[in-house]
Length: 163
Length: 420
Image (cartoon, rainbow over all chains, first blue to last red):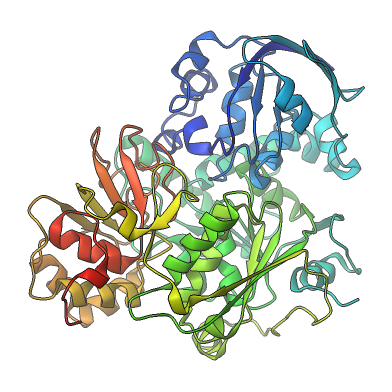
């Protein structure tokens, strides 16, 4: 898969409350509405300007905090093609995989990627291309690739149960 | 080479010896979900399965917005009640019972050596009872409902050893905030974290709970403490399953170790907007406070009420501050009522609310206004956490919260002549 888009660069410890505020977890449930409030408490410009294929870049511990998977799915619904971070919070990483949203780890790429530039990701090759050069990211563990390849956890479970 | 607690418990479930980094698929003993069960049930039906794989492994507890704040929350609760009835989930606790993480151990759903998953990040709490417990997402809970199984990566283990005697008034909350400040919000990322040492062994069930609960704030997958005598006595009255305490071998591999002596620990505070932005309370003493939130799965148990009631007995809170109080559960509420502390707190000018999460994730019951400062006994102070990104949230112990209520400013209890 090739993902190409604008880089939205943020810092360390971007938490689930600023990605998808807790007050919306039971009231904002429609995917279009979820996309509209994505990153509301972090960057008011994001939801207005984000385009399909855009890439979010974060520092360490991206997605820390709540287990709410809307913090992953709202970005997907907003059009985000991938998240590149130095590290991901554990539940957040699982939620990304379960929604088929690439969550890629590369500290070197994070340092090199510039906010606003256009970058390209080749998931098959495990490469991130940007103005500073080409950066590698490690492949997903084999056991998890199946979920990702199926398009997320729910299609994976359906396949497994023969549904 | 010996095994850690986590390697032993996950290995037993996987039916083989496991090592850190390995990914296994297992059936948990218990799967907990709360108000998010309505959304989970929709995903479950979307899979195309009609019946739960095992209704008895599920526990459903309503706490995140109880009673319902508006028609959307009300519909959410209604959907959950219909789902648990239709699917035969017997372990269902409606809005009166309390916060899921307090209710789970109170009602016997947590025991040493159990493997528990919950669709809530603070599921790590049950490590305080010697269980393996970790948070998962909503879709994962739906998958467990359909298949009974989940994949988990076996984590490396880190250890915090605590020695010394707590100075009067200094609590596990002060120490846990210090640990969060020291090792950072990702200090235990993907790791199992064990809390051990003489000071941990001597602690009450409620005090120990704070460490396991807030392990989520430092990124941990799960927490673990060897159940002490008081913990075992607590469990004995409640747990119906037979169990065996599981502990790490002395020669198990521990990736990193941290040692603390609490004898010189000061009152600590997490400042806006991250849990690891921690300093001694003295550094921010005098900061004006608009609201105090005494509640949450971290600090709203009987011993916390004892401290707060002792401070506020016969006194009034400052007219410049509002104090809202949420007992962790119905059981806690009934006990503190019996002891007369609810009368004490109401007479002091506090607002007594129902057991539940309250404003902790910004749903209702005490959302602050723009520019307001909130002092909270809870576990998370992210921007917007209490429902308003223009508010400032500080995290403290119940004692620091109570003394600050007297003046409407952040106070160091050591400076006050309270004769407690």
